[in-house]
Image 1 (cartoon, rainbow, N blue to C red):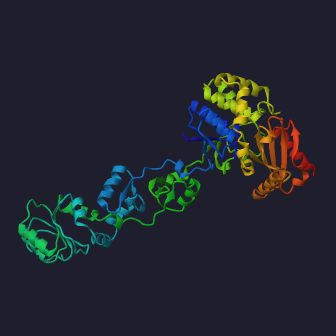
Image 2: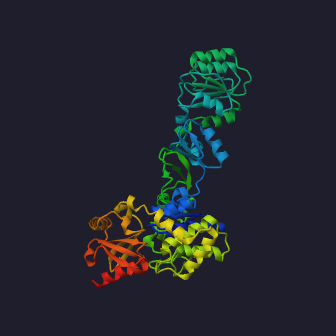
Image 3: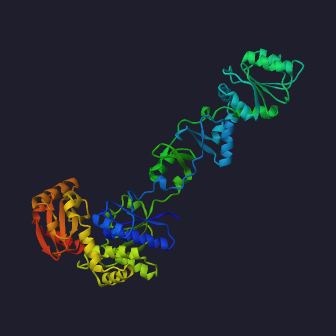
Length: 533
């Protein structure tokens, strides 16, 4: 079963992060492989809550498309350039793999070898075998033939050709042996004759003993002598498996990186005839193989959306993902899928309220720290139940969670808003990167950045500085209107600042009492002004 990624929106607030964490945990309880993700940096408030209840920050999800790292790759069996063809065939057989990457000592891919390449030794013109045997090494011949080296030489004189000298009344008279590899039987006169005629290498078959004079003559003439562990027929066959694989491998290798998208890899694979492709990591080390079959039958990530349903708010390329579920409490906008899904959308103050109610409905255990986490998100998203989006269900679920967590709701709310604010340590850019959501209103791009603060007295910036930053954000993000909203918990209201081409429609620095909710109050106010202009 594929991993299921549970994620909130691009500018994650506490409710978005907690809903992802808690719902992924519920999916795991029900036997599904699920992990929580985030699409952006988390706020100080969220960091405080996660740390308080001992939860790790979710991993970042940067794209809905599947990468090769997410694919089941074939194991990275490989072989070195110095290995013989015989060793390569043996390894292919052991690994049950008709191909191997040829690597250096650092596991960097230098080439590829396949059974088709090896088959060319038997099927191709004899010129290929001659070229391979020109540079063969004595130790490789001996190992391939399961033989013993009786005479070795530092320098060889081989032309790559092979002669098999059979017993006859003509001895070795009729054979061309100069610079050749000569396979010969237990016939001492013939052995001496081919050595004196300039043989490049002598391979003895059916020999139990070798005349010392033959060995001395071989040393004198620079002719290695090997006693084969096979008869004439198999010796002649296996000899052509002694060359190094580096001489036969294909050096034109189509590599993929572990972080490449499967979508892009599949396009390239359709153009080629190769059955598998080496995959490397950031150190260019081989980590596995991608089979051609994988490029035909694959799916992008399986994703569950929480606290949002608009593609514009979600992970890049979400339209290419396999969307399984949506758990949300916002308006339904541009959402569509190619297959039926589970979609739960409630008119409620917090997505975490929905997730907590699903725990209760399914009679799933909510541990003490999970109850505290869910309760914190409900307090955050409903502004401790002051937001007009708050419902009786939010309060009822919160009370049950507080009982499990053994926490007083007001005490937790105080800690969330005052212990985690750090307002005096933040720059305006920090606030601008916080909880920001994009909207398209009357063909105008509008960004609303809302900061929940204990008190406006915590903000050390002037009105002019805030307006200037709002203008800069509008320019940088190509927005027609950038709205800074500082929601004051103590005063139970919000201060508004504007930047961008449409800022003159609004008055900067005004305080709106009891305006707390972005979706129910702030967005309608902005929308009404823009539509009436």
